[in-house]
Amino acid sequence: MATILAMFPGQGSQYVGMGKALYDGFEVARSTFSEADEVLDFKLSDLCFNGPEAELRLTANQQPATLTSSVAVWRVLTSETDLRPQLFAGHSLGEYSALVAAGKLAFARAVSLVRMRGQAMQRAVPEGTGAMAAIIGLDPAALSEKCKAIDTRLGTVEAVNFNGPQQQIVSGHKAAVEALTKALADEKIRCTPLPVSAPFHSSLMAPAREEMAPKLKDTPLNPTEHPVIANVTGQLAQPYTIDNLIKQIDSPVLWIDTLATALTKGCDTFFEVGPGKVLFGLARKAVPKGSKIIHSDAIDKAVKDARLLTA
Image 1: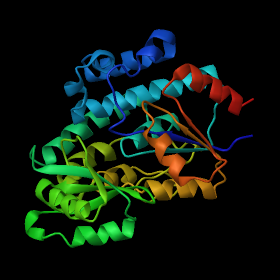
Image 2: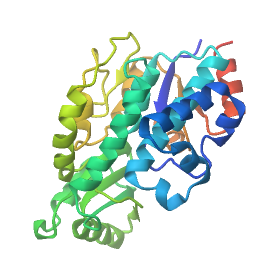
Image 3: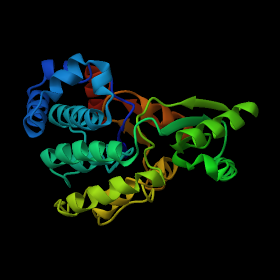
Image 4: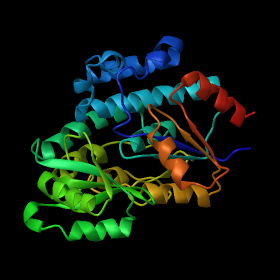
C-alpha cells in the first residue's frame, strides 16, 4: 500500500478554464464552486471558467480561485475513490487547501480567509514597488548571501521560497530584486521575474500579517488526526495551530524541508491535488527515483491513478 503525501498548490497554478471539467462532470464539484460563489457574493466560478485572465491573476481573486479548484478536485477524488493520504501539505496559499482536505478547517471559512488574505497582501505594499523572481542554479545558502550583498539603499530582497536544491524564489522591493537578478545574470545564473503584484512571504508583508492575525485567531480548527506539514517549519505540526498561518504570511516557504519530512515519514507517493503541475515538477527534482509522482490536472486520469493506488 502506498504512503501518500497530498500536495496542494499555491498562487501561480491558476489558469482560465480551471475547474470547468470538474464542474461539468461531478455534482460534488458543482456544489463546491456554488458554495464559494455564495460565500464571496460574486461568481468566482465564472471567473475560473471564463476569465478574463487579468482579473483571475489579481491576488484577491487568485487565492480563493485556486483554493476552490483544489478543494473541488479533492472532493471528486475522495468521492470517486478510496484515496486517503497519510500526510497533507500545501505550498503557501495551498496550506489552506491542505487544512480543508485534512478536515481541520471549514471550506467556507477558508474561502473567506484567503479572499481577505489576498486583499491584505495587496494593501501591504504599494502596487509597482514590490517584485519577485525565480532563481535557478544556486543553492539556498549561496542565494541568501547574495541577497545580503545588495545595497540596502535599494530596499529589501530576501530568499522566501525554498522550492528545491537549485530552485529558489526571492522577494522584496522592485529595485533590490532587479539589482540582485542583474548581478546573478552576470554570473550566468538563470533568473526569471514572476508576474505577481506584491512581494509575497518577504518581511514587507508584516502589515498583512498584522491585519490578518485577529481574523485568523478567531478561526476554529478541528483537531483531526490527519497530519499537516507546516510551511514555516517544514515539519509536522502536531497539533496544528493557527499560528502557522499567521507566521506564514511574512515567512519563507520551506518546501524542500516539507518534502524531506514526508520522506522521513515513509512517503513514497506524492500526489498534487489542484490546478497545474507546479508541485509535481518540484517533486520530480527533489524526491528519490522510484517515487510515484502524480498530478490531478486531468481529472479522469487522476481518478484512475487514485484507484490504482488504493487497489
